Image 1 (cartoon, rainbow, N blue to C red):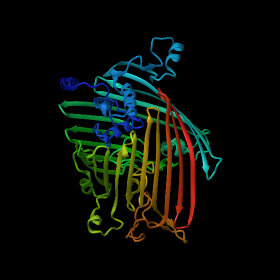
Image 2: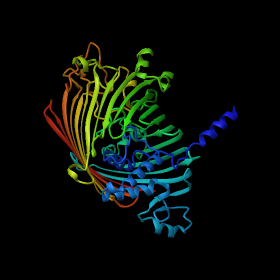
Image 3: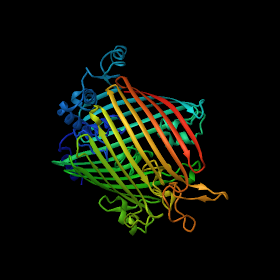
Image 4: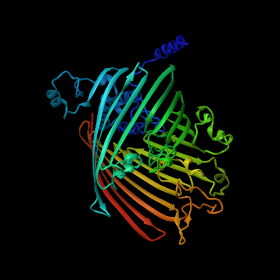
Length: 558
């Protein structure tokens, strides 16, 4: 048995070697650059399943480098910066600085690199394929509300330390942990940093000083056993998304807590396959006995034909109270299997497409079907059982030949009761937040966005959202009138209206304008400025409320 194990290990390690296997977390801006280069048809980047290893990012950058003549001056500057960060052979003492381990006196080393334009690390050692990087991040948030209360101020400070690297040319790893604290009023905290909505310590608020913490970790093993076939398995906790969407992904948006998961990826020619077995938490409760774990199994198959189109199908099941072996079988179609398990879980599937047939133009769309109900779409008789969402959008890069400018527009519609389930523990939420599009059920939205790369040191963004939503409400007798507007409230037989007409209920229209500016005066020192203005119009009751606030986030990355 031991001989077989070591022989298998030897064979695995004899495959093609890779520089850096560890994943690049989705918060890093290189993903935005890859997306824009993909729409420009410089590369073909699968942004429906975006969590990439560092070597995959490096390979994309090398392709972009080979087509440098098609890039603008700003794109070339961004490319040169990302090459130093992600391509190991591009890093040297002239462009990279280590706080410790440089061989210089500490004081001289700090003067040399602390405020330089070099890529910065706390410490790094090793060579490509076997290495260790120690990194740190410090953030300071300063927020102020202008309307309706001009006296609300919030300050947040946090710090993170992380380890990442690759061992034996095939095993990538990263882990990080951080701690933060908040001063002032809490109102703006989840608006400045959405992660506060799902941070247990922050919401529990039992300590004298409101604080929060964060940790993630991931192990990823990658091989190519034959030419053109890439296989990976990863175990860990990280932010992940699945599917398409500019305003928010309908399948898995990533707005929920980071999932604890086993993830399998396979890529062969034009075929892509992904399976995720994950766990997360239920609704926040101050009572320990009311807290529970829920499970999500997802599988996705996609056909990706470069320069033409990508077509994908996704199946997922949410369940609790047990681990079911049927949902661990990676090649079983779970939407059908759930019925044979006595139809007690929340099953869903989605169809989507994306095309970049024309240079600088991307078109994508998604149909998300909750609980396998499609009859209303076919017959036109749509009622409470027809729970589905659809989304269609386009992104244009360099519209009207304006270099470094991108424009996106998207429409999203989510039918009543979508994402909900008769068992609240099985609804499509984590920590009470939708794992799908954050808009929620019985609502639609028009989303537009402009982004402009001024240079490698600055990026401007302007976003506008117009939302319509039908909310549940209470009548004069104090009885809940359920119109399918709350993800946590399922349809009640013999009580609720089975017609489930779209946008019925207490009608609220919302307009949201967001202006952002990212400024990077020195590499690894980042300033993000944001101004947001919301107007909520309650059409049913005839009144308006508005909310205006601004914040700056100052980050130092090492």
